[in-house]
Length: 257
Image (cartoon, rainbow, N blue to C red):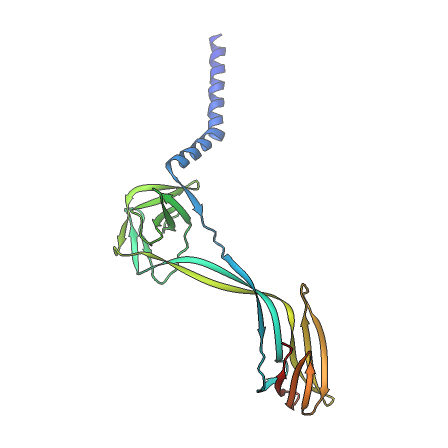
């Protein structure tokens, strides 16, 4: 009977150990990390959209002799969307280093550094700067001053190390570098007129009208007698001064604005 009871107890203990290995220990570890560490707000590595705006671009130059080669634009008036993006990085104010007994890291004032995210320590926000060792980090505040303790990222949380951080030189700081970029989207309105040369004693133009929500606008070939004089295209008045198959000299007199 005692042997049977011993066998049952052994099986129960084995089951508890198995449950701990697969379920209880990871959960317990995560709870301990949350208690002993600091929650990280991880940074979005992608550029951030600031705004989108409609723009108009045209090349109207009135009462001035202009010359274009075959295939070049005579007149254009386009409407399109421009997206403006912002990216943020950090750069040291001078060359220096951050050192503990185990995590030496050199910083170059010619290099931009991306942060991993932010963390709140004792009510103050700090930016998380990767070190030369994986998962080990340094902290600096919004004024660029470094925290006197390094950190270790474990299971998505930050744990502060006991080692003191030595900053060299002592006035080494991080400064924010903000860059703005633009991305031009699809043209959704307007037109473009290009010179297409001379053929059969006529001056030819390629006319392209851009239409909203369409990848390709309306295309048309337009021609006029090859002689000096006033011509009209889409409400625009031109005076042809000289035309050959290679180039056109003209003057814009009126536009459809």
